[in-house]
Image (cartoon, rainbow, N blue to C red):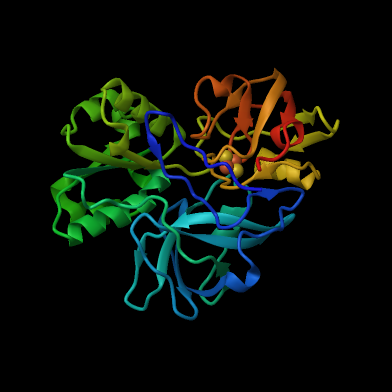
Length: 358
Ligand code: FES
């Protein structure tokens, strides 16, 4: 069995997070991506709150440490309800003691990961994967621009610092709900000076994606990470402006929906199972916990492996993936990130209806 590797909108280049080995198929939420012997033990050495709803965590990997690359990430293996689950976090920085800084958005409708991460304190131990980088920074681009929204600043900040250290110019545009809701704003203003622009939604309204793209030099390579609506608007503006798809690089993250998460329910046509999805739980996790054999890989809305087909629906869908195009979204959703805005649906699970990809 092999995982299908998904791409975002056809006009854009999407960083996909591939995992070694096979894709995963439930019911096996407790399965991990790596053999346990490949995991690295790490000790939390410091924690901080750079803004009220972001936890900054410095962790020191035991042994040889971690290879730090701007845009890279580690997977943290967390013991949560239903078994060990994996969450990916971008590196923000590496300290002189080789400790790695990550940051976690503390979500009220957390699937459990952010709550567990927010409780970590110095001295606690966690298990992490080796570092991987599916959002690499190209130094070959003639010009660089960065666009981040909310917690999407984490990989972008590391990339901007790498360019600055290399003596290269760039612009960094950071969109926040309001000034109090973004981490490290004063630090970035001091560090990047005129290269840094803060976009405060509460004062300026949402980013005008077309104007933003139009203002970029035609040779610019844009790196972005943020909530789904912001990235969708910029991808659409990028395509409408006729810019080269390869010059738009982006990374998505889960929980980047347009609406607040609420509970909903589904009925699986093939098995007859009725599954209720809590507000702090993904449809994928609810299906796995109910013993439904749904396949998955990235858990970030990028690979499309967890796609389920919608046969009937009483409610709307909050699509949060970057895999399905507009056409695909009419009758399907990616169960790892997308959800109903309440109500109920009858779904078909791709891997039951069509069998796993081989
Ligand atoms: S597991 Fe990859 S899109 Fe859901």
